[in-house]
Length: 450
Image (tube, rainbow, N blue to C red):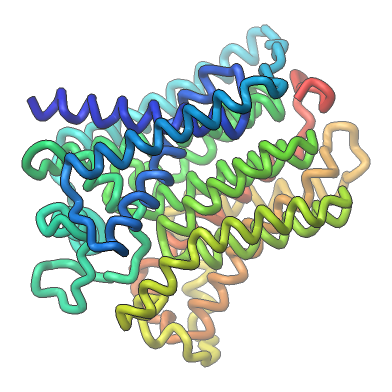
């Protein structure tokens, strides 16, 4: 019975996300819309649950069902009203066939299968193993589910920590458990599906930008980062922050290469999702994203369009910050985050965490080497020079982390290895994705076909 209820909720959310996605993109590519359905529905779901929280509406199955039906009806009406506008279809992408490429694709597919099976086993079969998955994430979701309201505990008596964290992951886990008793498996299953549908959507967006081999390379490099492979087993919000930022970057790349406003709006939706996923979404997501958009706006002379999307994205998240302030909660988990003091003793630990400890794999050997190689040959026909600005996002997060851990009391978390690698996940994934964007692949699609 619980499985049937879960499947009904999943179908409801995916229908909602499909309709919103088709309205925004006016897209005929059913595979892309299907992959985007759950990542988009997670955004509409968190906005619904936040509205219920603000107005004191209990988070019951019936009221949430009514709320989602209203959203679906609104999305359906908007989609029908825009049905007379021109729709878009994905281009036919030529796929080169050769023995070396076939071997390469097989190797990538095997590696991805291993990561998928590992994450599925840990998310759906084995018990959760990380303390933060209980205190910061799933335990808070369970307490909220049982309270029929988002838990904002200021003490850890119930095992709930960091009440100021945004609630996208919690909202999705609460929704997945409606119609019955709490189930850890349902909570893990819905976020597991969110992770992999987000990666699938990233694959399809990159395939549209650079072709099949670029998409397969990106997915293998990102999912192959050891810490990301572990986080795909669920338990932390960092994996969803990372995947949403990847989707935002790729949507922005499509806007850059096509000048179609729909991709800019989609990028805004994913940046909004990152804001609602974790506190770092403000600094690691919104600020670098807005800076990149302003760079594009100046080049494209679309300042008004870009500023509108930036403003709307932030204004939709602003009520949550005001809500936290009204509850007497800070915007960051630690009061010491605001004090600045240089800690040179952390420099060795900083580079050791990047290069020696293994959590980030070979990323910080591979990425700088590839970056130097591409920067030294900008006029080479295989280099996509227009994609260079996308590197700034990952580099900006790297510099922010350097400041956070070398210039604040957070140096303790760097030295004891508690959280630095987790916060470098988005920088690592974005840098690898941007490097793939900088290469003109042989089966690349011409800009006119996008």
